[in-house]
Length: 81
Image (cartoon, rainbow, N blue to C red; front, side, top):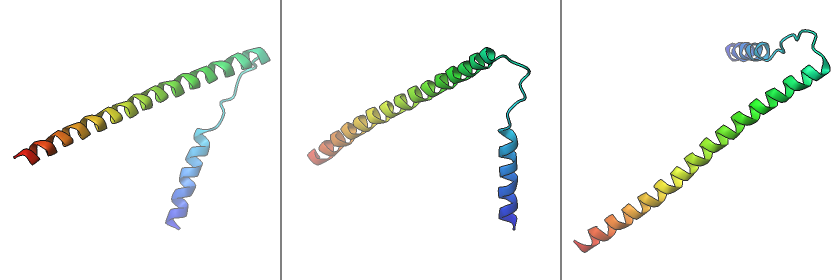
């Protein structure tokens, strides 16, 4: 019972957060312009996150290579002693 109540509250909160704002009387052209602006903004955020994810992945690969090289050198140094 408790779980279903929590799920219901989350669903209600989600649905109310997603409601569309009432628009004043806009012409079709103004609606289209507003929709295009929203799409451009979404595209910009998506491209920004893709750049951040790409930089993070590149950094991970670099650190993997550096760590492998350091581990290999340490192993060779330990074998000499």
